[in-house]
Image (cartoon, rainbow, N blue to C red; front, side, top):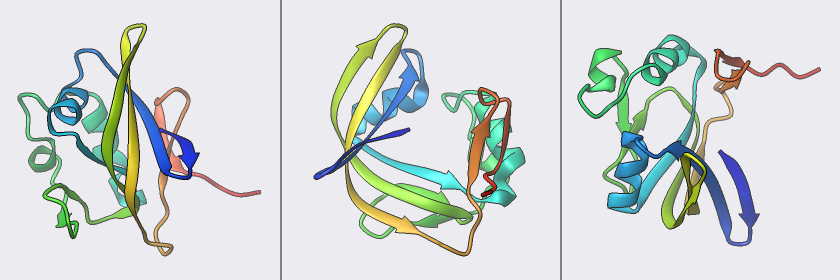
Length: 130
């Protein structure tokens, strides 16, 4: 995920052309992009290794979910940052599709440590300053 604009606030993320997530975003026009909390490290790796097309990843990984006001999309309870967004444009880029989205709401919890991908998504762990 990358910030694309601050006025209006826009983000972009790419998914493979076969991605279930990408297909859902293009069908509904809605997405909530999150930075998961530290307790979800194992679940994040497990979710990244499978498709959600035939598997309920939330149930399979025992992820506690919470409602987001103004959306029918739920997010993990342990979330550092959530960006509620609407799809503005999809662009094919090689074997992926870039989703350009306008953010309508930012939700954050300063008390939580967010996970970041390291080594080409080979590992997830909190970032350390200094």
